[in-house]
Image 1 (cartoon, one colour):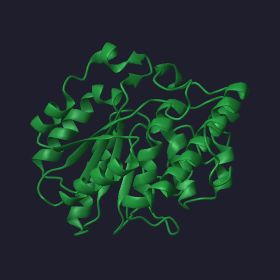
Image 2: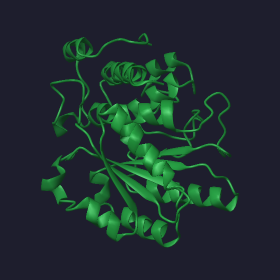
Image 3: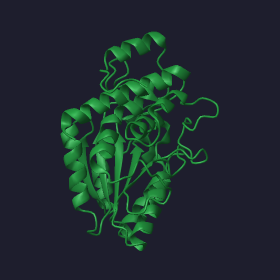
Length: 280
């Protein structure tokens, strides 16, 4: 896809996000909006995946694990828009009996979901296990994972980081959504992460940095990381984003981490987001 096509998808995904959370007055729009461009590029331009014949094993497919599972709205939208399940199902988000639960879950067997997530800190460990399984099975596909920056305050992340480098899990590309915000405020105020690039380099990873809202930069960085797979080191991308990107009254504030827009705010938000593919 060209850059404009990807931008069009991202705009529609952002409309899906604000409509989904507003409809049930529940969900996490801030981080979802911030990660929209990344997940759009990943699913529509980078990953090798099969949306029409989903299975849990994912043999000979690239896999993606969402560790910061609270941003499920953006993932559900991208999955639906890329063909994993009907787009109309987005209207069931967080409703009783829906497969689109507040946090991704495997018990409802929603296509595209291979791990229940939302308990922060666990996604990297799961992704490492999947990546090692692929290596043992001579499957040259890649495992991708996404994490919140506040999630890096969890100790399990760093245990997994040590392990991945020590065991040369070099078919793994992790990304950090570095928006500087978490549920209680700025990451710097809650517990500073220090120099992330130096930390991950010291742990033995290839480290990249990118603007998470520049479609071309996202594509280029992911392709550069792919070129280093199979060469002895896992890779991580520090992705700078803006929480609430695309909706001016949400941007840059941790207050929209887990608050849904009301009807009036939804109207304002939709006025700022172009409908490009048709609403569900």
